Length: 210
Image 1 (cartoon, rainbow, N blue to C red):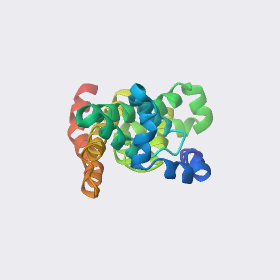
Image 2 (tube, rainbow, N blue to C red):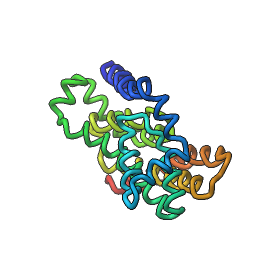
Image 3 (cartoon, one colour):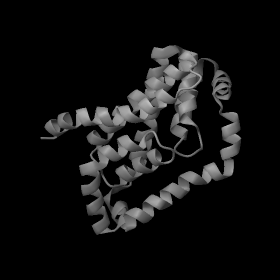
Image 4 (cartoon, rainbow, N blue to C red):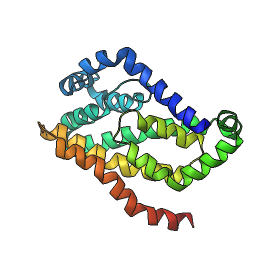
């Protein structure tokens, strides 16, 4: 039960910045607005873009638009690499912030029974939770934090995170680079590819674990 309450609490925490600054950030971070904002950093625009993607943990940053802006500014290959790294760092940051709290704090928050059940759940289906949540709003940040708190295998988490970040980074950088006006197929592809990739990687992970 504590797992559910914690999940809901984290969702509320993530939604608070959207409620306070959501309209301001939405107006500012259109595709063209994201490009202009990154250009203000000059030669450090790549770092500004990656920091924005990591900042999505705490602020209502439209990560997909930032990735598209990276593709526009840096081209398909470098824009994709920067988008992948930014998305991967964002998920890893949420995971490790909660992971470093230690078992004692995790048990205080979740209860001993909840902590044990959470470990079992995340090490059994956590990869799917990470993969399926990455293309949704709010949930990626929450699942990353929950995975860290519940001591999900770091290897499994980062492998699942990478299998999501790679197709998303490439597809949205491609949208920005090509200037696709109606990227619905690309967005659908970014939602469907991560589960397929994880399905292919799961047997490999199980062999590595053994």
